[in-house]
Amino acid sequence: MASPPDLFASHPSPEPAPASGASVTTWRRDLPGGSSWALSGGADLADHTGGDVRAARAARASLAADVGVLPDRLLVARQVHGATAVLARGPWDGPPPEADALVTDVPGLALAVLVADCVPVLLADPAAGVVAVAHAGRRGMDAGVVGAAVALMAEVGAEPSRTRAALGPSVCGRCYEVPAAMRAEVAGRHPVAATCTWTGTPALDVAAGVLEQLADLGVAAEQLPGCTVEDEALGSVRRSGPGAPRWAGLAWRRG
Image 1: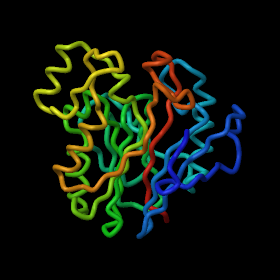
Image 2: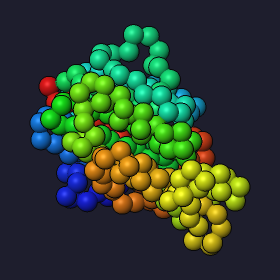
Image 3: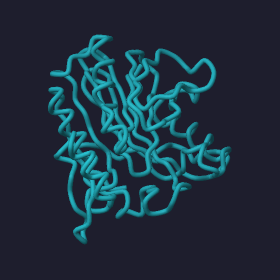
């Protein structure tokens, strides 16, 4: 995964995932005030797609070590393409909750969303010490998952005017072909998301919809270039099917 030097600095993980031997590399940005963002690459982090669960969990442990937290403090929700945001203040007590956005104000908890075409949205209000992540696919963007994350951040002291966001690579509008009726339905609520593929067929640009929502909320955002379908270094369900490897977007408060 390529990343622009002004947004993320390459920060390779110190050791391979112990069970699989697969390396987990993060691209990391340390923000003022003790907050950090990162994107992962390399090993598959999904334990729900029918792949090697042991290897995925080992890769998560390696990623946790890379960002400086214990394995049980790398938090991933059960993502369901919805708009539920959950406040996390410690390791999960039981199974992960169903949610597509996570928020914390606790140092040493790393929040992660797993993606393979959907938009990983990383958020931070460094002054308030509040960070969040959101998993924004077509359904989540349409349902308002980013707004839910920003609203929950505000409940614990963040302000949209101070909050910053970064969008990781996702399927681009040129590659996200959809039926004409679906494009029309989504465009009725989010006109900026309507676009066409390389060949002129109906398509959606989910990242454009997310960026507009953030702007409407008063949140300054940056987008990393890159399309998950076009870049074979990135997992993509559109390119490889449901078992495509998942990579992560992360946010945490350094403690």
